[in-house]
Image (cartoon, rainbow, N blue to C red; front, side, top):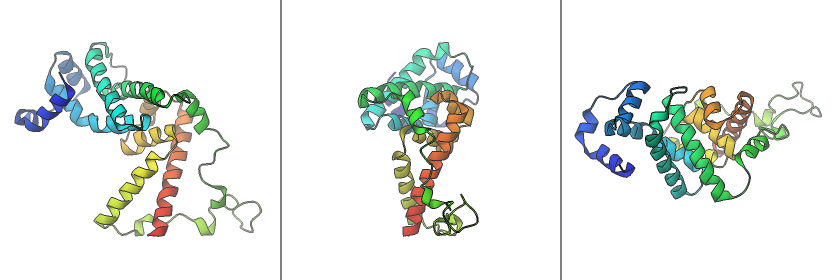
Length: 234
């Protein structure tokens, strides 16, 4: 079964569109083990786009990311009989993807191992935001460490919600996410874009809870800074 073929049939076959979805992991797993293409198509609908996006965070080349995702789907089909339900099906799928894309990304970069990236990006010497954003001990301000009056965050609820503006802001957000340090980009995408829980992210990316929190905080701070600079120019 070719993944591209299933995607094509999913878009053109009315039977796929009207067939009731399988609601639970157990139903999906059993259907996949029986070779039910509708179950596979349902998973493709639900996760394929997100998987490609996650793979591109490991593999900057889009074709390499596509290959890693295809390889992941094949691994899922070949390994579904070994799925024991110790995690959710979603976590299992993205754990496989993370490993496949990580391997391809390392071949592509031939540089720093991903385990070392975690240490580099959680280094306490790397501040989440520039120091000048806050009142220092040398300033006359009473609240040392609080936001400096010239760098206070913008009240985003006052930003106009026009279609053109929202589209441009979405582009800026995507750019900000893509320019984050690697592991920070992974964590914020899983948490704030895909909506995964912290423990799921730790399982998928093999992170400690502490490292996950540090990476997420730094990623969110840098994304907000990038959007803050954009808003100041609007």
